[in-house]
View (cartoon, rainbow, N blue to C red):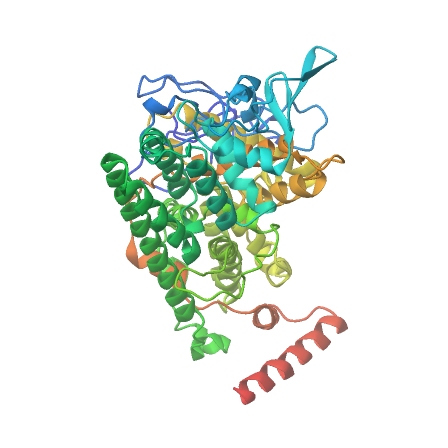
Length: 588
């Protein structure tokens, strides 16, 4: 049986993993037969072994999959499950593999004529300016500029027009995703939807009512397809009741001309409402769990009572099972993060922000909840280590969490891995020198090396590429799991936005930037759609998400009670913390 670690071949040796409920504690893939501690420099020297696709279906190695309108289905997604994770996006030697390289939104689309005879930005064929830049050709068609048949900039009006389907045209799917994702940097989704639907209807007007009905009947399926892609990829846009009203109006308009398209609109709306209902239930469940976790039982207030408190080892003493349950939580919460939330973090403020309605919610609430989960896990690790009164028990818990972190690494759960490392590096934990002296830190040092922030997390990015390659050629559902270090993903997208101008000096939208934003987010969508293959242990899950954790001040005080102050500064700090916490308890 081959080793199940996702980085087989990267270590000098790796033990066979036995996945059952009664297996012995798995040995570390970091252990070498030739040395007690593997050399950090050789951890990733091996080449990741390629495996055959178990589905025998060739997968495109790019972020988007293009197909004709006739081949699309309402359930089909624009992104490919074999998306390749990029290297450091800020490295000068990087050559972006952008979805625009596969775009079929080429200049040939510019030769479309509107029904009223007016020339839009895409049908101005009178003059085409072309310039040679090195080995590429830059061409301007009206208000849209291309480089090697790839859209690089355009006016906002031209981009909106380019999104509107007609009888003989449907926008490329990568363009649809890219513009729907990033258009919110320039206008509200409600405004975009209103303008697109209006243009789609107006372009079919000829002055003859019967002819108008025939023409709209021909374009209706493509309009439904566009709205289907919108509602399935960005369903949270429709928490705004203005968007729902617009969708309802279009459903009524479609019903006048095409019964088939009307039925498709009805089915699309039902799926959307179901998705939004699931989101509402998820948010209520998270709020209830957070409320339960905020309860402050007396067992957390002193070390004597802590002996009666259940600890992580009494709930689950198998590192692999705990890593599986952490992966469940990670994938559950990832699945509810909308792709637009990454862009909403730095999008323009909605002028209707104070608009009240059932569908109005915070636009980044699920993303923020996921970041809060990372913080909770870090504090949970620190709490579990600092609470035991005995040094031997604290050392045992530290070693257990090191094993859990290692299993998270093997699974591909880098977010939980980093949360555990963060918790163990918190000052209240790191200062416990007597406790750490009882711990074998070899594995922990290697894990820290993997998540070392130096060189823009180059070691982690190498491991992430290895996990992604494994996912693309996976033989099992477990091998498909890739959970990135989420805070770094947000940072990458933030600096990509901040490092590139959204508008060019001529007022055009910098669409090259939009392509790159879409590429980053599309990779996340691929990772998000994986279903966790592990069995759920509800007792462990309940403990992880609801057990109370210490605050930062409480952690420091618990640490001082475990191992006393070593200098006058720590003595003053302990005295101050005791006074502060006592004052808070009296006030409450």
